[in-house]
Length: 180
Image (cartoon, rainbow, N blue to C red; front, side, top):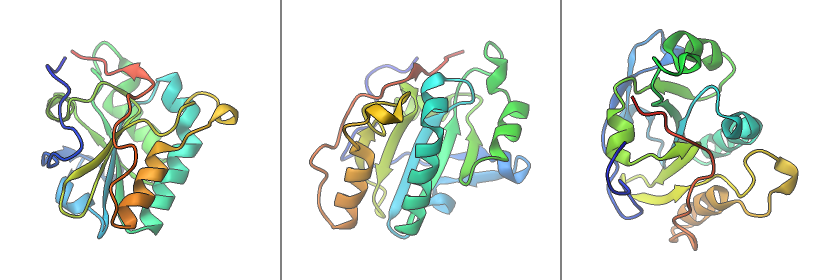
């Protein structure tokens, strides 16, 4: 488990290169994923009920991000040994249903650099690679009918308008990253 809280709004993103489940394991890196307006990174996994409950909203957010000129990627950093549902083969199967790249952080180095704590946990960065938001998608990851806030969407809108998000940091709601 990483010490401290990791990267926070105002920090520069940390570069990485990870195998992409949609590209037969070929490496994808931060620069390749960056859109003209920035990038959304979500630490995710295959089994967490919070991820599963948010799946359709995460897909909608990925579409919105792409339409807005941002890249969007998912990173699975869970320990694949103790959590076999998060292993490479399971990732490949899930990736067939995803519209965004799904990368494998098997050694957990990227999650450690970023300080990822939960799944799902989102990092929004601008085109200069500066984190402008870190935290949750909204306030009800399991039940979309109970959503009252949309922090990630609001942060993206602020960034696109050249503004600082009103709320740039929330604590994610979800399962803990499964450390080896």
